[in-house]
Length: 285
Image (cartoon, rainbow, N blue to C red):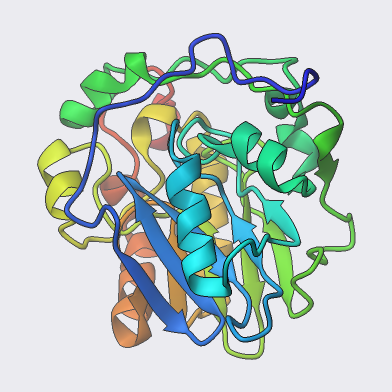
């Protein structure tokens, strides 16, 4: 492991798994989604070309699994051109240090996520008191100390382009975290939403385990700015995506996605915003 890179001091395996764990889905010829325990990673690129990008980096201790998934899809010893992070929460950077050490590839994230990825600043503590079920209650055990990627992390270009993803643009979709981004491709309206919205009620363990599909706002126990989160969902809904890969839950497509996003925008306050919790601003209700 490179000296200048390290995980946070509270880094550890989290024992939570869904029925979707270990399942990969090809949504478009060059868009593949794979579930690591309770979180999704994305692979963007044509399997025949060996040119691809990894979106997010899974749960702690998942590097070997991620490497074998990429090699299965793109061939032995293949490596991504880059890793793009939607944000830096522990379940999206869980294997990042190991992957960068192994592949020696650059990592890109939004400017506002940099403090959390260069060891400077911890995320706010997860909120175990927030309205929700068992996963919310478990959240204090989730790592929130910053990882440090040293000089391996770079800022996404300010013009909205995404390195090695020529047709995609990145969009700043804060709320769940300050520098959260989503990725969108105009020509087929493919959306990689990160945790701006998800397709499972991530706070409830039985829903996480069964992957019962249901559109929801960002995971509540880590979301600190609900005003921004609502605006981000409204922006993404305006794009009218045809397929959406989210950070948690099964991908959604077609009419179900359109209708679900409309409902989420209309009823964001009741669907997404918790009734109580330390990051809930009472003015919203």
